[in-house]
Length: 314
Image 1: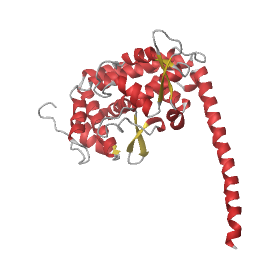
Image 2 (image 1 turned 180 degrees about the vertical axis):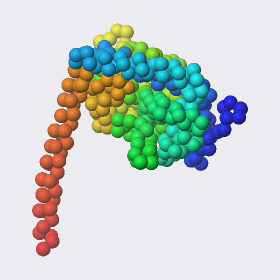
Image 3 (image 1 turned 120 degrees about the vertical axis):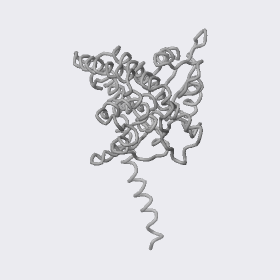
């Protein structure tokens, strides 16, 4: 931390290792987090742009969004505003770990300070970084006091901290891979996954500050947690592997939620990606039918149970 810069007080539940890890987020003057968030957004845009769109409205919207976002990212990376984004990401990471709410007033007082006029830009970019890098949503729960909670995105129950309880969330990487698998026809070759991840600076054989050992995390931890399936491609020589959604991914989230998230990042609409949207819609309909079938079956079981118990009541 630069001399003279005041360290944020951490909650007593946050241990020394996590404190050091969170503090390290500010040492790069926001470059690493902002660049990774920007790279992730660009990667999502590039991947989605290869998919069929309905008309030209989606492309125009996407282009407008991209042209607006990149100058802002440059401004943040080359000014002290970027440092404030980094400080806010660090502050929000603490709040996520301690499960505390955070308010706009608190953020302005403890983090933004003399840059209050730039609060919307700083807050927006910090939230984007939390989403695309960590997979954490900053959700407003009280529009009057502007109070926020930090929750895992896409209804996932996993944040990577099961194996390192005091570590930073790793859900962002999982979301990116789930989206890639969906966009690749529900089955993504391992080489394609690493090609995409290299675009955001994540490599199989290189230790990552946030994700640790990326290869172990993806091919072992995510697989053990049943979010991914990692399978040998039949009859491949030399041996090649591919990724598919695991049962836990299907149970906790959906293709529609993944598409909505990726569309939001790319500045487009889910309906602009015709084939992906149709498949996601079909998936939603099948889940709704299954849920309805379960609801209809429940009263029959209950009624039978109630009937069986009547004689003993008399």
